[in-house]
Length: 99
Image 1 (cartoon, rainbow, N blue to C red):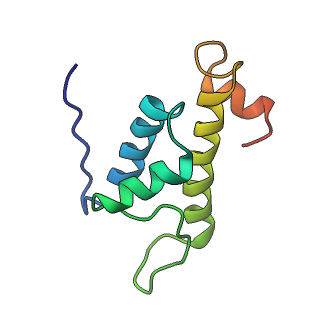
Image 2 (cartoon, rainbow, N blue to C red; image 1 turned 60 degrees about the vertical axis):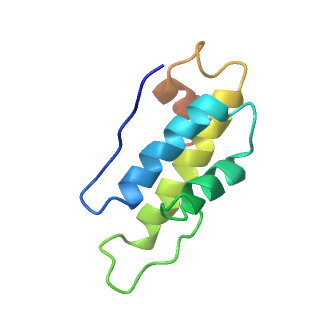
């Protein structure tokens, strides 16, 4: 029952990622990961499913793909009966060959 504040320099990509992780943590059992990502976009964040490199971007495509994929992995982790509360996140990633 408190506030969480997320903000990065530009206030879009990393902020949206952090908010999406928190949203997945809170709502993984109520929504699809695609809907969580769309919700974060609709409230003003980046569309994290879009892996198109911007013209002036400093992020190469492989980093955009990794950013997107890790969100999906985290969603899987939260929904796996052997995931959250039973297996540490990094161990779960290694066991599922998602590193």
